[in-house]
Amino acid sequence: MAQKTFYITTALYYSNDNLHIGHAYEAVATDAMARYKRLRGYDVKFLTGMDEHGQKIEQAALAADRTPQQHVDYIADLTKSLMKTLDIDYDIFWRTTDVAHKAAVKKIFNQLYEQGDIYKGAYEGLYCMPCEAFYTQTQVKGGKCPVCERGVESIKEEAYFFKLSKYQDALITHIEANPEFIQPKSRANEMLNNFLRPGLEDLCVSRTSFKWGVPVDFDPDHVVYVWIDALSNYAVGLGYTGEDDADYKKYWPADVHIVGKDIVRFHTIIWPALLMALGQPLPKQVFGHGWLHIDGKKMGKSLGNAIDPNMLVGRYGVDAVRYFLMREVVFGQDGNFTNEALITRINADLANDLGNLLSRTVGMIDKYFGGKLPAVQSDTEFDESLRETAAMVAKKCEEAYDNMQFSDALNEIWNFVRRANKYIDEVMPWVLFKEGGKEDVLAGSLYMLAESLRIIAILIEPVMPNTPRHIYEQININDDAIKTWESAKKFGLLGREVDICKGDIVFPRIDLKKELEELANL
Ligand code: MSP
Image (cartoon, rainbow, N blue to C red; front, side):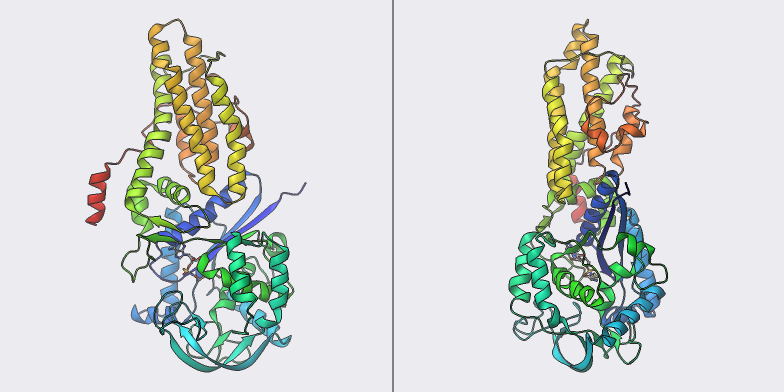
């Protein structure tokens, strides 16, 4: 049977140097899903990249004394380096300034113009430059952008329009017939009630007030307005309209576009309408995640409260940061970032629960058996309950990951981690050791713990790509066959003769008070 494909994307990040923990959040979630699908045996393509055109970027380049191209090159390097720091294992890093991208955008624009889906008119409207979006009089309250609350300006210019209104009924039908298309469900209702049912207006798709963009082929005073340019990346990044479109044929339609709630509208109305006009299949799903806030407020460099993910990874390690992001916030809802919540979770869940389980297990095998468990089979009265939890955890976790409910998946795993720690307290290996004569029982129960750790290592891998390696090293697991997702559904695959290799503490405890003081003084 042919391997199943899975195509997943993040939004393209605007080319600016203030990518913060909110952007990292989206990248980590997308990466976790891509890793999960790879573990499940899918042929995965994961696209991320940069949205590099527009007036705001042109102005930022000028302010930094760079040409726009130099500026976006510089930012693309910074972003790639952040992705590396966060262990984002993407397949494609797409840039809208790529020669192939610009050529494709021209082709798409030409086709839509030639078939009558794009026409020339005049635009008059209220424009928010930071958001690069037009708003209607009713959306703008007190002269302020409804999204970022900064000032909007009144603009009139000759422009090309995409016949978005023509696709209104088809979009409504599609959304109603495909409940999976927009997730979470509440966002589908929002699109239907706030935008689609009240009626769509045609969309302005070109600008003459700036130059930094893809020029309209047949009218070069105009540049293609950013949304057509940016949205088309998801298909163009696979080769759509290009000479080699093998990947497009293989991976399109996308299984899921992961985007923040602020841009769900563009991805579930404009993008599908463009695809309909181009006669291409629609993505199977757009998942609109919530936003990470700081003290309940929007985060941003200009607001002075942006948290730098590089700094967090530098202090606590990448797996701890990824764990926190995926565990703390229900995917789909907004969440709040605080240093205290982060450190508390590192201490409780990682240092205490998981770290202790590993160090206690390895420590006891070392102390009681000189590092090597004898190959004996023995059960304690507590084994059944641990085995039962183990038997359920992979399935429950799978269900949660399948629905992109990362926090639920981690919660299930941590219930198992805590169950295993409780097992140690129940069995009391130190008493068995002291009493003597029960080496088989002692070895058998330590085996139970080592085997539990093997399963835990597999299940955390999508979110924590490095920690499994430390667990495998310390328990000395080399056989890839018992590191697969399917193998996590079976208890007892680890050979009985466990030969440990004691290592460093994986998650050291952090002094909360001292750390918070240090962070406050940064
Ligand atoms: N360039 C557009 C997207 C074009 S997609 C064809 C854009 N860029 S962005 O850099 O502003 O945002 C990129 C992604 O990061 C978006 O999905 C956005 O919702 C997300 N986030 C930005 N701030 C965020 C938080 N504070 N929290 C969570 N996600 C955040 O929009």
